[in-house]
Length: 197
Image (cartoon, rainbow, N blue to C red):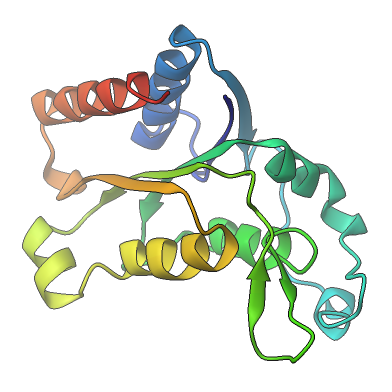
């Protein structure tokens, strides 16, 4: 399987970078082809341009400004997203990735009747989110309703690809996580990614 492994963290020594390395090692050890997309290292601009917004309903929609990354998404069989949750949401660079790349002609098309969208990422068979939060589990799930999971599973995944496996692995209370807890999470990531077939 060809996996697009996306990292969205500005620090190369971050725990997120360790998670991405662990995921890559596990996937490659199982024979998968991994395409690492480090949004910061590749200097991805998350800002939707005026031209992109004005042309959103044009057919075809002009994705030339992000064609390279859009092609990488369309070539993938699976997406593995590695990112921290900041303020119970995506980092801005990852939100911008969705705004600019999960666009008409790449992730979906507008149906002829208008209003609805038709999934186009039928190549994507799995979407894994490997994430951390500074908040404890109960705050993310019970108080906030796990917004990132809802956005990824109910929104992005379901609107762009109808038949994929979705999984989210989170390390909660990251700011107080001990080295033992972090290593245990990396092992959990390794096992989960090693099981991808």
